[in-house]
Image (cartoon, rainbow, N blue to C red):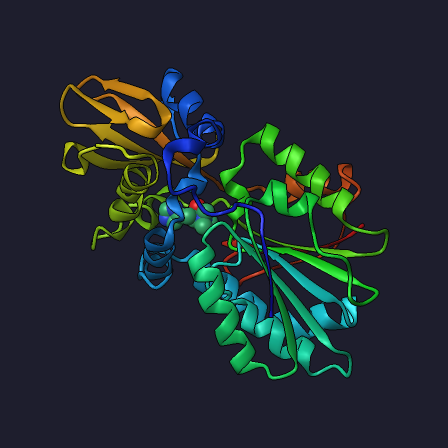
Length: 328
Ligand code: AVJ
């Protein structure tokens, strides 16, 4: 088991406050803009990752189980198309769906290497240890960090062939510009002939989409609010979570779910370590996430335009979710 930490733990004293501010610059920019925004990756501290795990089991949250069903149905076809390769997974989280792939690839003669990448170092560690237990011949190298930093600093190949995986429609969090940059980075991280496996959520009736982000148990609300708790913890903040409510809807024009936090009163909050004071009016929102619902033909065109040639596209019986295998 090897580790690469690209987001070194927070400094203990405030003697590194310049570095802290540097690291929080995306938060400062987002909270100073109008309308206010926050980068979605701040959902995923250890509690946020745990809340997301619970969301994936909700009756309303169809993406995870739909993607799992596609993987179950077509995993042997995927393995047959790629042959032996090492697996690099962006945003691996609990790696739950990855078990299907690891089981199939571990049946090949070749040694199997798996590189989970996640911003939550805690869930990454727990998952890696569990996987080593489940797959005795698996080699794991965990990478703690953002996609940008991880893609630019991937560990050297242990075998000839590599597949980058980005499942769960996490790419839906990226707007057009970020998506373009991301796919360019993916293409650059791969050698010619190597693979990219992408899972994406697709367009479907608005009632189904909105229910998935407004579950009856309120787990999605808790997940959304947790971003403020995470910021409080990480940057000595004083956001009062009771003064905000979860707000999610499908933006038909942009074909994306949007999650916001709506301020219930006029209020101010501080993030002390970022030297930042934020004022919110009653009803003002902080935009915390977009979750795009893709159109498959447009997406495969975009992949091809980034020299990631789609080899095969799989969907479920209702065409709710898509899995695309690309080759550089
Ligand atoms: C993990 C980013 C794919 O967009 O559906 C779940 C996160 N947000 N409920 C998604 C999420 C609200 C999820 N992704």
